[in-house]
Length: 295
Image 1 (cartoon, rainbow, N blue to C red):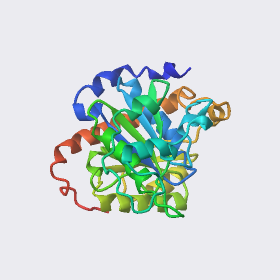
Image 2: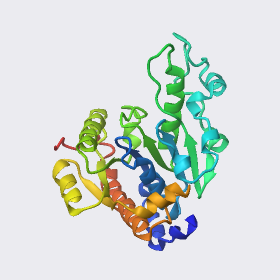
Image 3: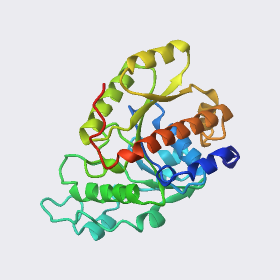
Image 4: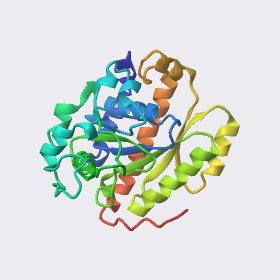
């Protein structure tokens, strides 16, 4: 069922117009429960439908991108941050070790082929979240996952989509320039909007200025108006209305793409809009401070 929605034929040539758009690097974030992972799945499939090789990283421990994609054995896939032997082998330090000298640039280039789940023409890596506090030190795990994210951000042959927690902690000042666009998923609620502004501030502190909002689950004109007025200062790249067919697909254990042609078309339109902004920004990469802080 899922391959039928890949027919955005005109998108194929569009993806080849310029290299930076072909290898799009997107990060998706937002408050829990706003539909972020569903939108990540839709965006990943839409990118893949334009002929790109796409890797999706699930870096939110509270989300389950594989489950959202209809992968039956999602619960059996252990996040990379929990693979202690692998992390020790690559970083030189056993996870939880306090004060150990670990490699900041562990080898990660073979990780996608060895550990990704291949589903619906996508490669999906379950990274897990950035670990904090508690009894041990998580430096080795976090260094490993961050090195993997950095490697894929800089890979010229791969389109990357990163499903992140609202804290955007997988990004650092050093890697953020490689992110073409940060998409913040927002639903019509004050909490969701507050989170969007907090993420915007965190992103701009890191030097990431190419960001916009996807308004999700809008049921009425009043919902759309609320988001348009509440999000003054953050561009909105598109709206996805609440769609019962997506909910039915989720309940049936099926992926969200192919469930509604209108949704697939809207997502393809969002991808093209992000491509355009990416291309217009591509000349600014050598001038990371050329964007004024307009709020």
